[in-house]
Image (tube, rainbow over all chains, first blue to last red; front, side, top):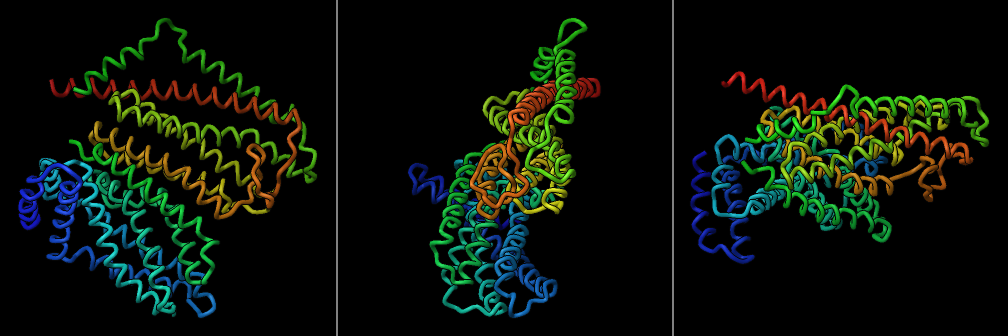
Length: 246
Length: 254
């Protein structure tokens, strides 16, 4: 509680000292990321909950589909992405809880920084936490689904692009959901329909990687994923100031 | 105070002179048009020539209301997105009322699309539902805007409610075209009667004779008028509701 305020005040002089330029902007963004990372390192509650939850999702799919060797590759991409998206949702819904309950958002809004820097800081933090979970879940997924290790780099690429996609809108919606009566309940209802293209293209790319499909056949999905990421990062960045203005 | 400016705005919009208002005129016009549309769709329009099964021929007439309802559904969401954008720029309550009214109507019309679709699909495709792009995009748009209404319902502060709803409506409207591309790449079997596409696997399509085309265009027009009428009344209702709320607040806190 006081730790995050302390880390915030620690970071403020350095970010306020140099206001102009891209360097100054990035310093502010990373001050906010550092605040979130410091909070998370001390509590470890979000990342550990997301990790255990995603393992449980994979486990439950094993029971639900009774995965046998012949249908492994058909369901594996779906299992991976449901695990990632559900775990990510868990993290995103907590993203602004401390901000609101401990008055951190007021502090951030009072700080001499651009509103969009707050958005980027929170978004990068969310992508970071979800990525940490993915780094541990991916190898476990590959062992459980009997995949060769050499596809890991390509999988990591797709997973990161997908994560940016749903974390970009997710961070914006999380800042809204935290101010509603329903709170965590509302976030998936708002977010899932918007991120359908991310899920579709990520699942398609993942299954192409698992099936060794030539890249040319699925390259349009990669384009779609990148375009989605670009559009929604830009849109959320522009709309964020309307969400936090008070 | 935002509420006081709202009252003056509402007074301007709700003062309509005389007993016969635009509302009455619109209601009568769209009522007549809808009855005419029913007549044309059910009686006047000829059977589609290449459909042989009687059930298919009867079900084909759903098309005259199904297509206009889908058109109104998307039109309502475009109106909502534009109104939301205007709200964020101008901060006039009027645009928030427009966006809310439009989304509510869009959800209702999409519900109609989703109910009439399976009734047609069962005799034609022999299934109630398939994961065709048009069906999927309609469902996703519908869910998007149900999310909009749920978001509004969960925020108490009226100013914040309007802001959040506007932000959400803009993101939702942006996601619809991208969703459309993604889902279209995913699969397609819906007949492209209105917007011809290269979906050679389409089933249940039929040639549009001149009379069928006339009926469809008339129904599209009738539905558009119906939508405008409903928008007029819904906006007026919402303005009155907000005015009552403002007056109530004034009485309580005097």
